[in-house]
Length: 313
Image 1: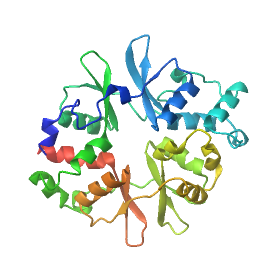
Image 2: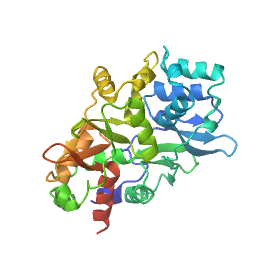
Image 3: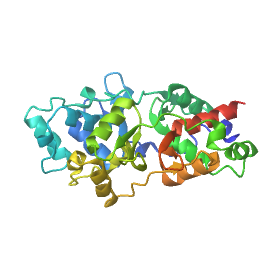
Image 4: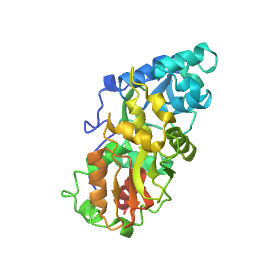
């Protein structure tokens, strides 16, 4: 996999126009930072510390939703209005006392902020992600300015196009999930009769990006992930969906987005899984048995780890 040795963190393979990288300040009000995420359809943004003149952590939509729901009652966030309306109302009533980004950024500790310089080779970036179990790294240029953010999904997307061009990768791609001994991690799942917000509490508690949804017979019927939060838009009352049973929440989501979950069998090849993840822009693949019961999950980190391990051999 020579690609990893030839590309730098500043490579044009990755979006590196600093104008498209959105950041927020530690002193920004939470509602202003929230509008920044919503208007740019992103789940998180790096946080700049103006006093120390450096980037500090990530401000996450999931962290904010968690804070809103856990510090207020159901009747407050089931009220009419989009998330900005609910947030400002809670702040006016002194029910939500946090006001600026510094009060809430990285409260879940899910996104450690790790920085590399723009000349770092991609194999080192991938290794850093695997070693620290992180989904993204920030890239700084020689002036110390944020010039890029590289995610594990973007690296995997690039690699998904190279199976036919790299003999080492082609050989790896022919191995099955079972042969590679991945997809054996315990599945974090939730019953379809639970509340949707219970799924997000579980995501936050377990430090995962998504959970499987099972029916009364234990069969996998869907998934809920933090990427669902991209549906938060002005005038869209997303918070009201969170009090619905998971089954109804999934039905509601189908009206506004493709909430397709991805699954595979232990006999499926690594190549097919990687290409499916890349095509569907998924963050995980559930491994199911012949009865469609979830028996494991392959995460983006699992995929990247296999690529890094075989790259070093």
